[in-house]
Amino acid sequence: MHPRHLLNLASLLLLTCAAGAAEPAPAAASTPPTETEIRKIEGIFGSDLPKTEKKGSIRLIVHPHFGDLTNRDYIRVLTGIRWGVNDHTELTAGVESYFDHGLKKTSEGNGIGDLRLGGKYGFGEKLVPGYDTSAGLNLFFPVGHPPIGMTNGHNEYSPYFVIGKKIARHPGLELFLNTGVNLLQNTSIAGSFEVNTPHSDSLSFTPGLVYNRNQYHYTLELTYETTSLIGQDNKQFFTIRPGFAWDLPPKFKFHTKGRVTVGLGIHVTFGPDGVSTGGGGKIRAEFGISRWFRRDKKADADAGSR
Image (cartoon, rainbow, N blue to C red; front, side, top):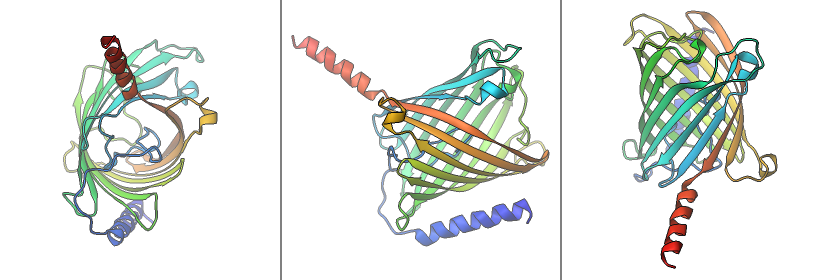
């Protein structure tokens, strides 16, 4: 079966299931994620879901790429913050640094390779009764003098819209459709594109599913990306990406507070460069830091009352 037909069939099945599971519901805010739900993990699960961070929550995210120890001369470490501004809005900011790990004969040095900013607004079920919807914007800027293979040398502006539905008859199962635009702006920073990725502006559609079962998470993304409508060429890309993630229990994270997730994923892409495959493991840690600020305020208040 041609990959285009395979993707269309899978997308139709996902949306049909979502429509059949829809149940009328009153308008509501975007449901805050719980500790048993999966979050976006680069390289494992790349789609933004409708959920927004809980109001007042501030999380520190640390995401080292341990696969770089064998694949690159340096290791990348993404560090960021996600803030739940209110019941509908979240903001994110992060930097990806690189460090020479010393396991290769060559050296790329140390530094900051890119800056990432993002924001998302959750409409809840106001736009489409029975479905959770959100709109957001992700920004990516290469900075400094990163290794050529670390970035593509372009600023990226990526607005998106996502609609999702949690299936009441199957607790933990959520279907979603994410559609977005990726706009590229050339910079003076040297970079290179990965195999089977667009070299100009593109439009993408990603139907998929997430199944959360306690500390285990199963994901599937089916992406069609095209440069035909808004890009400078006529390229088509079809990607199938299944993934699995596991939230480590306390005994495996030395009983520290916070969430540590280990993920595995693979992808198969059909594009202008032929069929390309890849995969690997990721680890990401999240720590709530809101309580630090509350603790400091409480300490100041106690000191002032003395």
